Image (cartoon, rainbow, N blue to C red; front, side, top):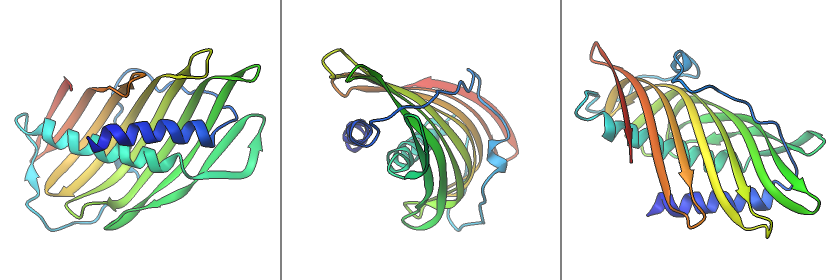
Length: 213
C-alpha cells in the first residue's frame, strides 16, 4: 500500500536527516477547535457533498492520507539558519501539486545515549493555504504534528508514533469543516494503525465521530 511504504520512507528520512535533538510538546488528549480558522481557502467547483455520519470515515481517511503525505514532505524542509544544541529546525513551504501551499515550522531532536540513537522527538506546525494535491479536495486550516521515533540498543527502528491535531475548512468533492485528532502508530515491521476523533460541521449540521482503522 502506498501509505505504508510512505511511512517507512518517513522513518528512513528521519534517521538520515536528523542526527541531532528537540523537546517534545504535549498537545493534550482532546480534539482542538479553531484550527480551521487559520490559513486560507477559496471556493472550488465540485460536488461539495455534505459530510454526514454515513460518509465521515471516507472524508476523514482522505484528510488523514493528505496529512500524512504533508508530514512526509514537512520533515524534508530543514532550516540550518538557527540550529541550537542538537535541535534541527524546520522552516519552509510545501507546494500543492494542484493548488496552494502548506507553510511548515518546527523542530526535531535525536536523543543520543553515547553514540547510539535512542529516539527522535519532533514538533511540526503546518498551515494550509488553499492546498490541494489531487485537484478534488482543497484545504485551509492548520495541523500540529507531535511524535516520537524509538530505536533499540542496536540502533534498530522499534516504533513511530505520530499525533496530528488541528482543524480544516475544505471544499471540492466535499465541503465543511473538521477538527481532528489522529494518532498513527507504526511498529517495527511497518504495520500501522489509526485512532481518530473528529468534530464535523457540514450542511448546517454538527456531529462528532471516533473510529479506528
